[in-house]
Length: 293
Image (cartoon, rainbow, N blue to C red):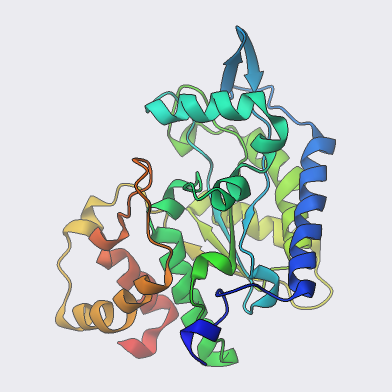
């Protein structure tokens, strides 16, 4: 199969497109029905006509080919950082605070408008490249076809759907936010999107997702949960020189996958950083693809 015919190019079948639109409609309706706003802490808000408007939860970004491709991969980072640390967070908050439907579907709307999806490890290239490694791992057993663009075949979101206003660290997220998002949103996302694989970034995300999957009590095969270190500031990984074997794995097996990721646009927020951290991906490959070593 040529890249022109590979999954993630052109348009998916009508059945897959319908499954995607139905799942997203169900998830958007769930966010509206829940109407949940954290009462603990100081969640991010927008000032609309001088009044504080707390931003709602949101649904995952779902690639157009997600329901036409196997394995279905659902990726969870931690949460959006909407603290006032950059100029664009105020712009986002103002835009989402004025339009509830846009706020709820902010990730998919951004993708359809050609804007960067506001999940930092996604726009920096970490999540797409890790997802491709998961697909390569799956190919060894199931023979999955590599997609032309991985962005079109995966789903991406954050576990916690809210941000604190005054602290960017994940440690500032209250335990109640994790619990409420697990039962109100993440469990329903898992059911609606029917992933084969869930990739969880960050230790807390891994443990919280594992509990969600356990509580759902799948009658057949539950989704496999793959754990990854959260790709934040990793100076030790960036500074560590690669061994000759690691350099070969990076050059011959990981770096070529970058061509299957949608390139960044000119938006100041959207800059790839993953290429500066080859050790991060080599470490993942060592656990998932040991035969490469």
